Image (tube, rainbow, N blue to C red; front, side, top):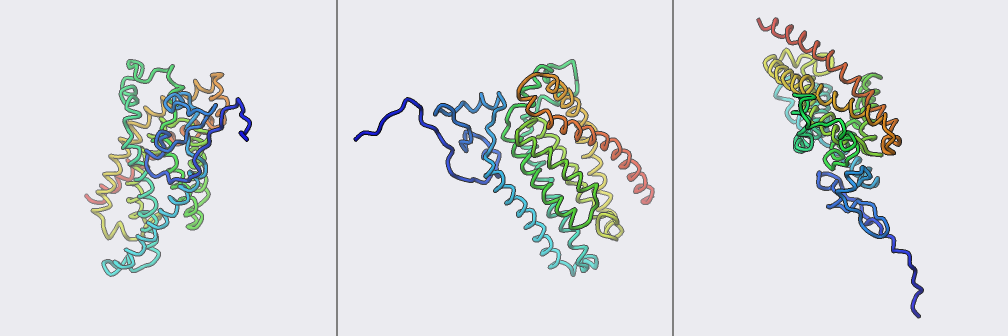
Amino acid sequence: MCKPTTDEPPVARRRRRMPLLLTTESFNSDETEYCDFRDGKKEDSERRRQTGDGPAPSMSSTMLTLAVLVFMLLGMELGVRWALERAQHLHPLLAIELNRHILARHIGVDVMGCLSVAFIGLRNRDVIRDMIPGGITFKRSDSMPEAGYEARLFTYHPSGQHVLLFFFAYQTKNMFDSIVWNDGIIFILHHLLSGAAAWGGMYPGCAHYYAIFFMGISEVSTAILCLLANFDDEHGVVGLGDAFPLAKVVLGVVFAVAFVICRTILWPFATYYFMRDTNNALKSDDPRSRSRRGWLMLFKFCCAGLTVLQVLWLGQIIVTMKEEVSKML
């Protein structure tokens, strides 16, 4: 006997799989088929990106990848500890276990975490190529039109989701380390706010365009700073700066150059356009803006706070550089 038919279209379901999201291509719906299905037909992925409806990876894939990334950072930290233990005969400072653990944390977790998001951001810099000429000329250029804020805030970019997930994983591991190492409440709050902003960028999804710079490219200077922190007697290995003064100065100069480029020159451009776009979004009646209002306010708060810190840090860098140069003269 034939089964009764129905006029309702069959419901299409996602494949039952939990792939790791390690490459930018894995975040692309065309590659992983993460698009939602409606009326039994697959939506056009390009149109869905433009409307801001997705396609974000499944939560199961995100959480699986998050766990893998955190364990990868832990593995790199333990790997650096093992290597330093084998090399402890090379210098008396390496014979101290605490020093080896400090170096392993800064190199295996902080440097590698920052370099990973910076690499993803730089590799996908073409997505935000309009920001630089628009920033240089401001209103004399039409590369960043004010009317295009919806596309910049609500367009899904696989590279943006990639940066955000890796950044969130790094903040998760870093917050755990801050608790274990008793870094203080300020560092813990920083990791919580940064992680919350990254999560909001992924789910419900917003500002992927700007995430490529703020949580990706700008971390180039942070990676160098994490290396330089090893030479600081307060946050690094006591005596390492005195043992290797030239290396400390060279890293200091490289960091200062990277900071000026990423945080003093490029950062104001990105902040100007991000604040303008979020203000326009908060004023609009667009359903995407209304449903993300709380996240947009959080993004603005974090961006404003970090921008103030850039100015303070720049002043601190100038003072520190003067002190280091005076020591050498």
